[in-house]
Image (cartoon, rainbow, N blue to C red; front, side, top):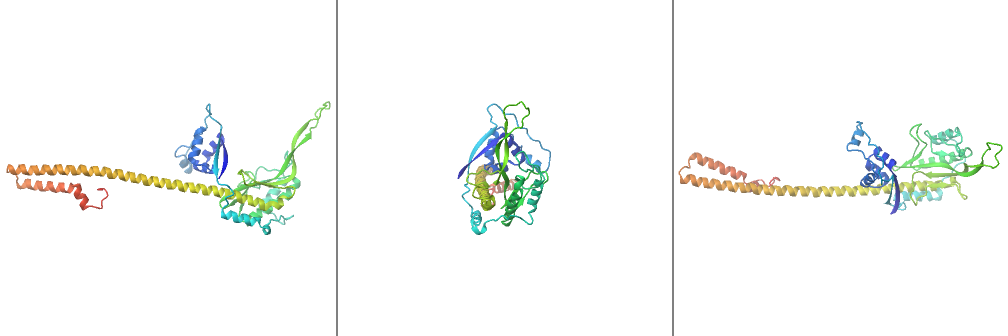
Length: 379
């Protein structure tokens, strides 16, 4: 197991717990919902009230509790360290896939030219080619159903070839490649595999250089410089929003190897991220099973306790009824004796005594148990 550090910010966590259920947010962080609830309480973050998500589901009117101002002594951030499974604990499926990528015969070759680009890549290249260079000298696009790519104009064709090769190779391996869902979406390159997804980007690295500023006044004696970012020609592929130690997130041009020759390495990195996520899902699935079993055992214990209480109460009820039967039986015996001594035992009174004794016999809990042994309400 390894340690993973999580930094919570108050505003960000507040937005997340109102966007989806607490249990789902907790799973995203890899912690229990009870632990996340305690963190929210510690940071004075209000949570959705009971019935909120049911109202959301049926589109009923809801209200959102505003985030209160911080009180003295309260913090705007919270740091947490949790244990998680090491990405080196490869599942058999991903171990086999990585072994396949490492075989020389499966090395990916990037053609110098394509007769036809993948539709996503073609659209991305076309959109970028129409953009003006940004201040760092790169072609950038901030909206649209395009892949996440930012490069200098002289590297556009090369980057498109690399990305096209990678998309086609991922498709061969069973990945589903996705872009943003609308023209207002941010550029995104997302691949889905085994119901898990990974996002990555293709970027050209920049470096900071000093540039001589143009003089505003002719009488200025000293030269003034400004720092600017300029393209380096070095391309990189980077897995986004994943910071686990032990997994290579960035594959780039080096002195000895071009990015074109390292695409298998990048796919291996994707498999390792997927393996990490799969392990997290398995871990929480195990935790859910354990929790479910705990609940089942607790319910069984509660059922036994409830049954024991019912049996005890019934025991006292039976004993109380038995005591009443004895009392009434004694009363009837004494009454019969008294009536005989006074020669008052008429046929009518004999019938009444007979009825009374039959009634007592029917109410006798011992007779109930003997003649109705299968009735649970007796024992």
